[in-house]
Length: 116
Image (cartoon, rainbow, N blue to C red; front, top):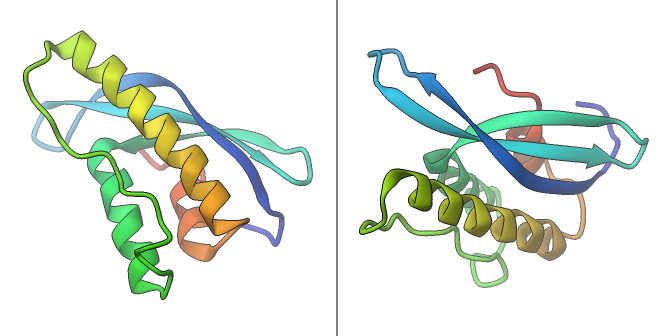
């Protein structure tokens, strides 16, 4: 990715795919905007959002200043759970971009177009 800054990222939908074992997996569609006006879609799984926070902390960002990634939860049926997660992940991305104040390598890599 070039030196352009990520200016927005919103979770706008989902995609259902099969993983390497043939098991169904929900990916979240992220609409990403950059300072140069470029727009693209990235696809990421729920666990990848949680891994992003760990990568940011490992890269030296203060854990106390970063929002917490949404936790796994049960009790809701499939469609309701996915819709609830989508809302939580969207809030997390908006808060994360605000907390970071711009592009950083781990976030840029996370938001790059996915190879899923």
